[in-house]
Amino acid sequence: MMKVSKIRGFEMVSTFNNINLPKRATKHAAGYDFEASEDVLIPSIWKSGVANALKIALNKEQAFIDEAMLKQMKPTLVPTGVKAYMGEEEFLQLCNRSSNPLKNFLLLGNGVGVIDSDYYNNDANEGHIMFQFLNFGLKDMTIKKGERIGQGIFLPFLKADNDTTTMDRTGGFGSSGK
Image (cartoon, rainbow, N blue to C red; front, top):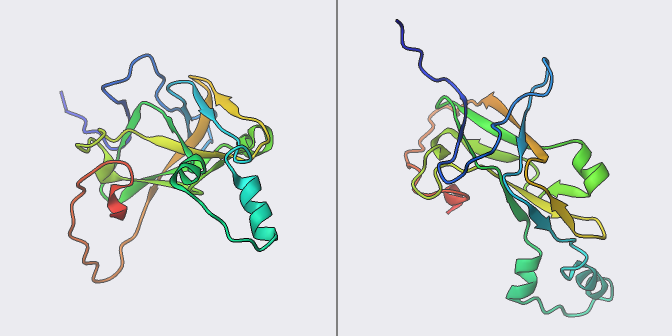
């Protein structure tokens, strides 16, 4: 019997159970639907001091922004319990669901996410994929476990002539920006 090697796909992170791996909703869908692995509250940005910051800016006042306010204004990470494996010259693009801004007032804090192939099974978090959301609605929003939150699309990428990147990944989420 011939052994089939894995090319690209999804696996459950070892610290999770009872979750669904991403799958495409229709035959011609490009994206794999990701679900939240737990309930997560996404606070409204208006409750976090954004409204006060706008008032200060419009009145051209000096603003005092402390660490607590900055922490409140950061996107909320929604865990999926999923990791992805792929070829070395591929990445997984994380996109928002088209219904999230319209129905739930949720935006991805980073616009789109990029999961590099070397993120898989990293020492820091095993390659756990999380979506980061900002809630621009007037009320807090709770995402429920099992709710579809975003999509992942596997894509190839090209390298520039004389590419000189030689570093290896040394961490998990956000580590390549150090």
